[in-house]
Picture 1 (cartoon, rainbow, N blue to C red):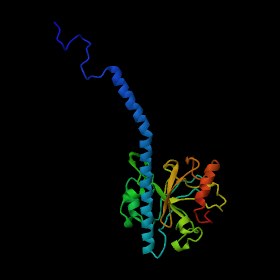
Picture 2: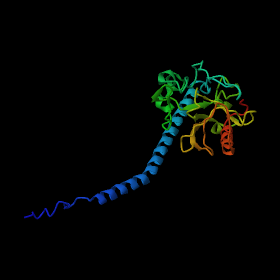
Picture 3: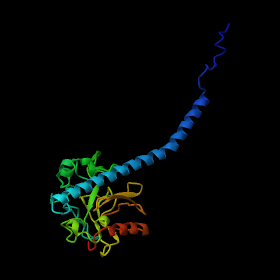
Picture 4: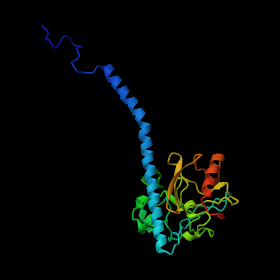
Length: 270
């Protein structure tokens, strides 16, 4: 005689799921995950942008503290290497003058001790993390598991000894005014080298060329600080794709993006 609870070999116990029910549950979970993933990614991207804005905001505070201590002079911004024109291929050189807001070469510096720690701004906020954008996943050359120390560059129009026309003091900023002079910028990871961001002004012969290239990390944008202390996130009209050093704007949107940045740069930069 069969037990009341065993009516055959295929009987399903009370409360158990059938195979079809399990597949339905898995399908529902997969659909929900697919719906939530874009929102999660968007929230993460937003958090990274906020952190990047905070980094540049604090570095601008450091810059102003430096100016207070040094009679209104802007932090020194020593460039490291140049290509003299698009037809030249001389390699970028190392920074020869350590008296800079941040010496060192971003793709090569395996430790903040050889770069940001030696910079003029570091004593005002001893946090190497401020120099790295959380959305920058580029690594040190030869060290694929080691994130770079620095993601930002300072405009060549700000107290750069290799650019005689650059602003030397905060009070020199009359055209444009401090609120319209960009200082630090999130830089494209394939183009970054020394800590100076090269850019030609709109009145230059080379005004259609990017000397250095802005980053394209924050939802096709970059974070930029200004001399008066405020920070903005700019969205570009065209993607910023690195091809070569000293590259021409490749379409109308890219040219307008370049012009927008040039408008925040001192005239007369060649």
